Image 1 (cartoon, rainbow, N blue to C red):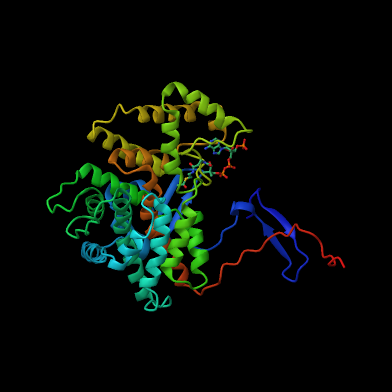
Image 2: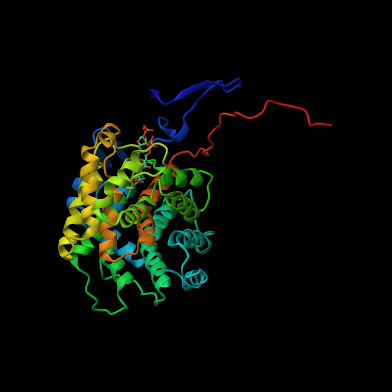
Length: 401
Ligand code: ACO
């Protein structure tokens, strides 16, 4: 069925009628069996399993297996999958040289895009996109290497040595180890922070045809190298309307600075003449509470209690904003609830991750979704993605003589 936002345009071409749907509000670009969202009811299912149940009982790597394979792993399959992922965490030394060529203060997302596309240079001729075995290997490689690359980008920014991955640790713990240790083998990572980090990854793992995943599919539909397709997804993620929102939330909270200034910012957000929006509020698909935001809020409370930061001024501003959004008619009528990025930014900040790295963390979490969609697309007969346009330019005219 065609939604109210779709304008139908009869084109005078042999193809007959086509739809004009700016922003793809009502147009499915593909079939998929991976993720289901009912935005009106606030439901998110991966392969049929509700996101809150996965967040409670599963972990990120098990969810990666589920997204890629369609079923939860047996305990033997899980152990094998985890071991394989952890065995691919190292990156080529040449990648470290590539990284050192970037300015130290370059935006981490710019570096991430550069490094993801350089992975294509390391793994290109060996990949047969038509082989399921090759596609599975690529999926494991990219899921394994992106935490290492993220930690390397962070260490480069602060001028510290890169830390080799420790494959005896869990995926999330190893990430925090590579980020914050100086390589001490007995470096302790708090279990509460490890669990919160794992939840951030899990809650971002997939979200059907969002802008970045659709970009991976569109790019991958040409048969391009999968690391290049993932890089294309990362570039789409960078914008503040998508993955850049978690960074924008923190910047906004810091700019507000004090609870007494909240009303001023809320008024700006409601003013149609002002382009400012309350970052971390609203969602294209969810017109109800984002189910991921509920889990993230609980994780946020746990982390702040663990770190003794429950009275943090930014948190006070965040809590007041949340309350306003749930009560103010402007937000209520437009169904603008806090989204997943509203709380993830507060957790990341408390863990000690710099704001400029937030979107890279989102990319890390979303990587299994990107690669699962790429794999699913290539598992069926492939049709290159090629949208049409509604031409509104000049009619045919002669060149002035
Ligand atoms: N603050 C104030 N008003 C808002 C906000 C906001 N954050 N979001 C939407 N609105 C208003 C719009 O001005 C519009 O009002 P109108 O009907 O009076 O013109 C109405 O709500 C509908 O907004 P749209 O732009 O049509 O909604 P759309 O679905 O296109 O946009 C989006 C969704 C991009 C997420 C938007 O809500 C937004 O910009 N939010 C802030 C950025 C953000 O948090 N992004 C993260 C998204 S989640 C993710 O990527 C994981």
